[in-house]
Length: 128
Image (cartoon, rainbow, N blue to C red; front, top):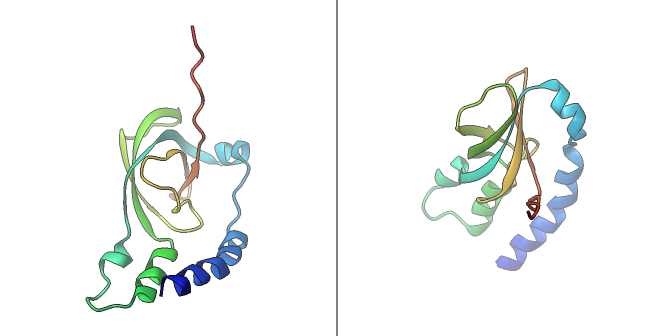
């Protein structure tokens, strides 16, 4: 069963990669009213939590790849606008749902009310 799940993931990856396109960071910054940097502190997958008892591994896997997630992000820096210290965001596969707990991210809030989250690499601190 685990091989079937891995095969399904490999076949689905090219489709999901091409269906969502990220805007360049500078353009995303311009069209956003709030831009923050922070850390993903929790992730929930509501569709997986509602899976009935006795469901197959394939049904569970299908729920995890659909991309709907509820993120909590602890904000460490605000680059634009005003934001709460902890953000609760509903994301899908096209708005950054595939980060993991402990990821450093940049979150953009657009004027249409949607959030987009992108991974942000660690920047080494300069030594004195």
